[in-house]
Image (tube, rainbow, N blue to C red; front, side, top):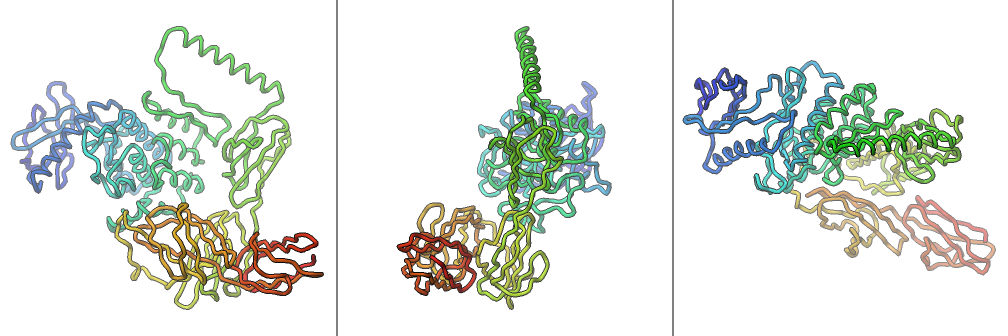
Length: 631
């Protein structure tokens, strides 16, 4: 077996020069191939530490697998494998390309941070290498900074395909979790099944760490890290990464680190392009240089690139083989058509408009067709109708007139009156870290254009929630729970198949439908077992004129409160004469003769049908209410 303290002078035909690094399971030495005077790095495995024959077989298979994968890949961003063999007394060895430099994980932890451009250059190079592997049907399965070498010349090399998998499954089995926990995808953790989208997730974790210096799913134990990867969004980076728009950062990483594979970017290069759109401290030349790093491989899928950060549209075409004169003539014809189209466009009074909104990120519609988000450079003609829509803000409509458009379209936030309520009522309210006068139920002016943090407290019970822009309390009564501390809070064990529970909090029962399936009546305090994931939940109670539909995310093994609003007494009186009362189109069973009915708190439409006709009133009910209506 290999003795890494007393290495032999030769391994196979290679002349050993020095030890490059060693660990508990193996070692890498620098050697030279005497035939061609080429330096190589030789990887050895310490088989005497292997516990059983099955593990020994797995290590040998990894060596063989890495050699097989290398035979399929030929890319300047991937470490090349030159030779595989076995040396008596040492065991198996792998001779590979020697890259003088440092692993990426040591650079991330270095005291001197890398410039933003250098970080993006590294990310672009890794993206190109991974996309090349994916185009060949190879999934790496262990993408992490420790498997990336950054050479002394600045070149980046992806290495260690020892647990790689072919998409046809011919190199290793599926259904087994292999890889490094901190960089594993949710599906890799839960099922052990992966495809290229799993590598994209791992690459997203790597870039998050490269850019910010911290993990998106931190934890002091492996169980905590795995739980957060499967169930929680990436952490907020504080302070934000310099040179990257915070809104853009969240948008890009929420997508690449999505729990569902189909919601992620289609390729690693697409993710890096998306990230570069959120970067503000980069010139056009630098941007073009980084874009160029991601189209070295003609076989990888390279979608069209549209940069919303600059006035021009930047397209990176796929390389095409030369096929004689006809393609050249076709290209000339295309150039003529493009040029002709440009002159026609200019001749008909068209122009390009740089569309900026305050705040940015608004969806832009031209004549009701969505064309992108602000900031956006868009060709327009006189009379085109521009509409800008941003959650939490009033839509802005502008009929385009050349030369008259403002440099920035100011969006006005929606200010609404909201009722903050709790179960039980009487809780003190802290909104955005400021105590409010009064207790729940409490009316407040709500700016929908900004995020809010709501904290409710009553004795030993409490509730806290963060509202994103555009989200409102909506008349819900938030269920107060017994306060917990970091010492008493128990984190659930990671069991992706364990159902969660919906517990009804409130004063009346409801009929429950989940994902379209009727689950019957649920009383106050009752629970329903629900599989983990996001579900559409529909609640109704005809007696109290209650109907609600919401999206609820269930965490494995966790209870989740299903709150319903409180009840109030509605008294209806009309003059002259009376009529029959309907609430939200449903017969209330009373006449408008100062009769009363119990209703759930919230927004309702009260209709009076009388010989004089029908009278409708919209009312917000946050407590007992008396309506007096003239017919």
